[in-house]
Length: 454
Image (cartoon, rainbow, N blue to C red; front, top):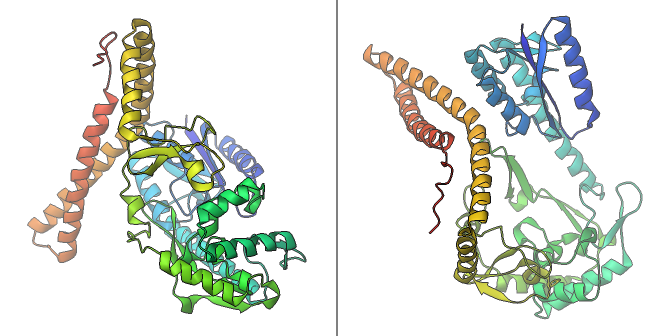
């Protein structure tokens, strides 16, 4: 019996949920025609094929390592991935495991077809991206909306934006208050107190008003208010390691600028007063390779980070002052009136002391131990697939190292071979640590009644 796994995916462009149903139906018919037994369906909805970071795609790869199926069937190669590296890697990994790849449109996938179709799929994504940018730039040059409409405007004819008189008055008021020395946080509080609805129906926050100057975000940086549309301020690139898009500000010579006097809400004098005050208040923050502010990258994570909530509004509590927790909603927009703060050490002491004294009660301790063991068992099962994958990769890397060493011994050493050996040795060392850690997790067990609380 040939065990078949079906993989389905659709992205957000011009497709919908029913696409998964259609893909699965046709795949089942294909499998039935070949006498295969479908043992699992993996489906990722509204997920880009340019990244491998897809929940069911990763689950399928994990199940492959524990011998759940013999073949994988998809509608076409680009359903599996539109990234040549990801597609080639998947084919190589599954070939090593003895799993065959099939698509409804191309039949069985071999290495040559992977390369050819992978290049076609990757080029399609690149071409589509360029066409979208070209279209957006064209709309800007025509004075039309290429993205969000922006607070202060409404959409009239298709692509046309017109001034909303009521919101325009709010914009003028915000610019005047800021130019006169009122902080964005204080402005947000005033607007929320008066019941003025913010952009997209949300409450006003300080970040809504100040934004980021270099990206043109935030109400105070929207150049449409002085009759100027700008396209190309930022460029998004996908980090190949994480699959996440990272934005980077672009030099001014890369911008596309269109003058539209009919969109003007703010006079030049007021605009320049705001820019001058922003210049005085600006603090330049160092950034990392992905353009993230270093203070965010190195921000400490405490035992109760992301756990505490405000007792008044139910919003998150965060470090809002020097080592003190406070209500984030109060700090950002004053929509909550809980201005109290508490030191991190004090709240941690209260929480952990309460846990310690509460768990000394035998009834509570038994319940806690049972629930804790249940969670440990769940995590152990989740670790099993990852452990198998790491072990398999470790074996593969070790074999590659052995082959390279053989080449060197036989006198065929080159700079590229030596460099590759160094990379593989580093990866091997990292994998050995990860395998060891995962094995510890997988064997974690708490004997009944052995919980100690101090």
